[in-house]
Image (cartoon, rainbow, N blue to C red; front, side, top):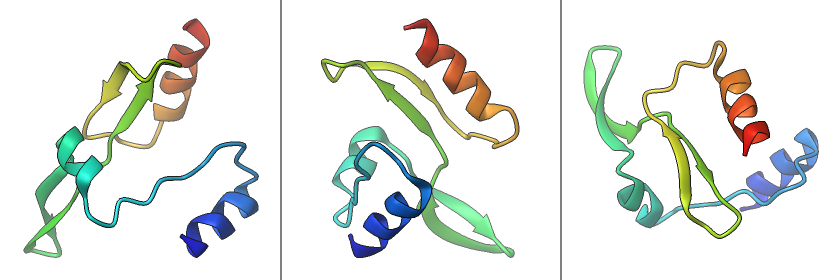
Length: 81
């Protein structure tokens, strides 16, 4: 969690970052996948974005995210809430 706090401070995030050492949330959201890394099969996290409402309900999810343009799409969705 120390690295999370340093990253949060560096980026000036006004929100908490989660650590999921036991992969409980990863399992709940189904983001653990087999991936190819340099020709080897490895277990890893599928890049995904989840937006939760103020009452904790899943409002929208994006799976297999590609970075270019994604931030704007998420921002547009959040502004429309």
